[in-house]
Amino acid sequence: MPTLTAGLTAKLTATYAGSPDAGTLQQQLTYSAAASLANGTGANQANRLWIDTRTLAASATEELDLAGVLTDAFGNVLTLSKIKAILIEAADANVNDVLVGGAASNAWAALFGDATDVLRVKPGGFVFVGAPDANGLAVTAGSGDKLKLANSAGSTSVTFTIILVGVE
Image 1 (cartoon, helix red, strand yellow):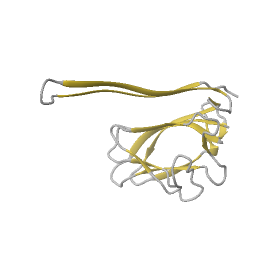
Image 2 (cartoon, helix red, strand yellow):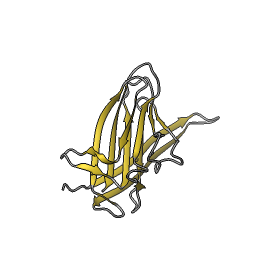
Image 3 (tube, rainbow, N blue to C red):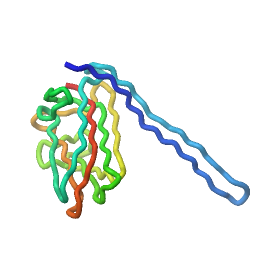
Image 4 (cartoon, rainbow, N blue to C red):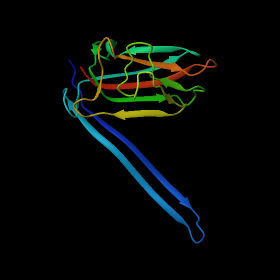
């Protein structure tokens, strides 16, 4: 089986400038959150990677089975038990949002407060969640393993890239 090491980094840089009553004011901000994952199944470890760029037709939905259906770049069927990182990026050219979550049955709800919750990824936007601790975001085969992705409207297709870093 392949081995995996990964670096997770979310970074925000900003300049906030203005002119108060007297003079000018400027605030510089650089903030980052980071974690490193070694190969394995415990805290700060992961051993599986899946990435794909997908397109959903107008009003279309799909459900990704995180335990036993996805195939990695080496042809291995992945039966994930934990997600340590998830990145979903919507294409800039999208007109509609990409909806994440809310599968009708066996919903993967570890990312959400409730199995019916849905996250909107706006055109050109992204969501990145890291969960490097020993528990990660749990996947329960057969009862909590379906990640629903949907096109928010019936006008045009949406394209997005999804990356999962997980543990088998």
